[in-house]
Image 1 (cartoon, rainbow, N blue to C red):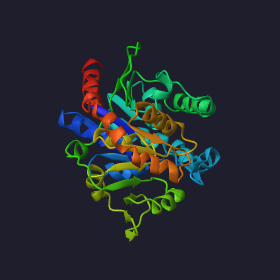
Image 2 (image 1 turned 180 degrees about the horizontal axis):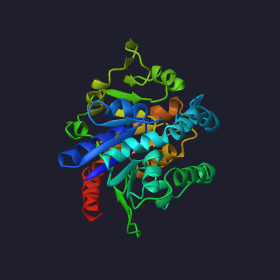
Image 3 (image 1 turned 30 degrees about the vertical axis):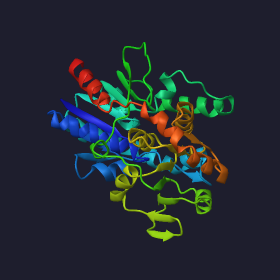
Image 4 (image 1 turned 45 degrees about the horizontal axis):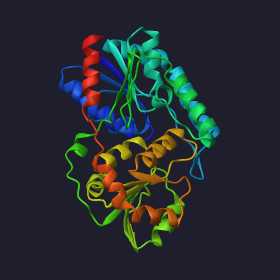
Length: 341
């Protein structure tokens, strides 16, 4: 089958799972053409056939997502996609796609609607539209806005494969809740209880470093694009060392992105997360983590928050023992859909 596959470019999660899925599809004999931008384009272009597009670029002000800033920063990209639409469509049509898959990438969805090609959506964002969520009142407004944004971004598809930390009963015949899909590099790791706490911030959080310096623990910190040692903190920027440090971490402190949380939970690592303000999907991940008993979170952590988390590590490890993740579930569901389409 000839498959058009669109991948969102913000964060590493979209490209990480897309790579795992596309490798499987090509191994199974399918032909895949990828549309991608940003980090996803850089990550996928060397291994797969990729057409570069433009996409949403997030703008942050003081560690908070700026909706206005994001729109202003992204508008030129959206206009460029519109201007180049006809030429891009011609190039895609030469490939003769029979089906389209989108990982929260709207250009692919629009192409599928325009040319009447079946669309499969694979992402974690559609938890907002299909899950029965208990949202705290103080997050109700941002939840409703995020839910609306997801519906506008990918308004319809023949099938929705929704990645979620927990299984859900779904009555809709075309909606499937599945465990997070993990890279083969993660699946091959052998976790151990090390002495260092791994810290990862995809947007540098200035306040956390000051807190870490006042704690009697050793920390490995990624996300600040430097290599150096300062007291009890080792800064690293080499992505090739990250998984080794994750596998041997005592615990993990990070922003609450879906992919890193999935990898840490799979490796049974206690988590303390700091959701990026303005991104409700990260707040949703953080709320799940606290309710599950496998970690904790704070939107504005202080010294006491981090110390309490580190002192409760054994409690979180006990909760993690019973957590199961079916890493092949996404692939199995996708294969079943492709046989039926």
